[in-house]
Image (tube, rainbow over all chains, first blue to last red; front, side, top):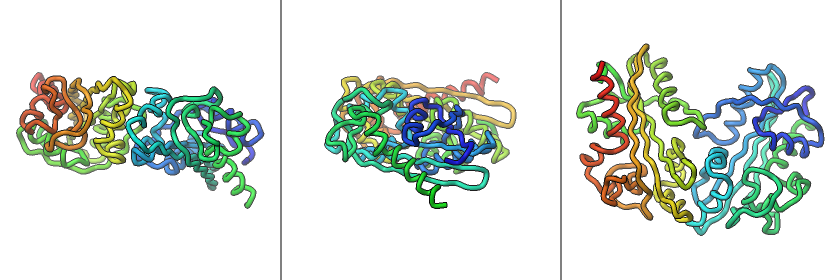
Length: 183
Length: 183
């Protein structure tokens, strides 16, 4: 990672996970940056990174995550955090009980930015939403998201090591790391 | 209404409905003002009104609307417009098929603002979400919202006259009108 970069997130879970994925400690800064409605996850992450650099005047690492439900045309997407706050992960499973299509895509964008340059990593994991929450590890909607490569298990039914090798967030940070090494 | 006030909305449906409720023509200005995530409908409307006055330098009328599902702890609230864009009103009915609680609250805030003063009207209508879309009038989620006073009919099964006398938007504009007349 860029020396001196701080990870800007309000989520201690994301912070711990990013440290595990990257295998190094990251300084966390809790800035509550307003996010606009109606934007895709890449645009939200870009705006967040730019705002964080302006405020902090140091290199920053940010991420934004989206969960796109096929049955709902991609909703809630980046707005999934508000569904989690309002109703928790079990609601995701129940929302889809009225639909036959339970497919979902987990999409993460990680951005490293300093005053001039920006590196973008993206991770996309197709999967589906379980009929009910299963498992105890992870956080957020890990208990209901079944990645296509997981043999039917939710993220929360895996060890942190397994999830953090192949999750949407792991792929985004790995992709970001490759971009940096290519410089 | 305040002389010279323009109605700032991107929705021609809301424009026509506001004219019917108020019984007078309103000049519409289509400004796409960014709205922040995670705010209540009153705060969103206030920020929109302030931004519109700054941009236009004339008195403005704005409204924002929220649909709060009891089974989802109030979600999607003001974010309902993104669910409508992504999946349409039938999705609201199907989302709740996994829940026994179909209660919903329609909540509208209408604000008139000039450079110095602000008048706020609020309209709240309790109701529920129909099992499937019904009716042909109105727009947006009118086909699935059954107001508590409607004898089981959706907004879309009523005449525009009936809806526009008692709807969440009608109540908000009526409340705003009262505030103005009290001056």
